[in-house]
Image (cartoon, rainbow, N blue to C red; front, side, top):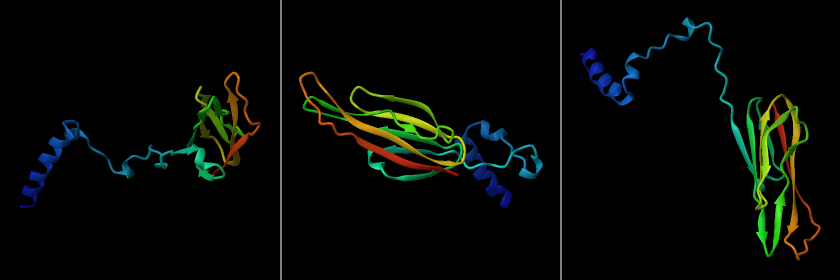
Length: 146
């Protein structure tokens, strides 16, 4: 009787998963000595303007995405510089750029153990005929790769 109920459950499950599920067979881990032990999946940490002063802990292989938003008002654009890593051997920038609206973004890949800082600075860019205050606003995050 136990076999009967198993057959009834298997058929709808197989139909829901598609035909490929009918032929998929997994051997026990002991029968697969050539496979490396599973490593935790790499994560992606997203940092924004609000993360200024924060510390993050990463594992080698993780990514850090920095998304800084600029502001435009009354003929002044408060624009961010492209984020930088103080130690590029620890966190390597893989992509980075700035937008005309003052935003800046970058992605860093955690290469090896160490502690570094990610930095950017926001400054003013005036339209013709406008004058900006000479204020530079720093942004900084400390990143530790373990």
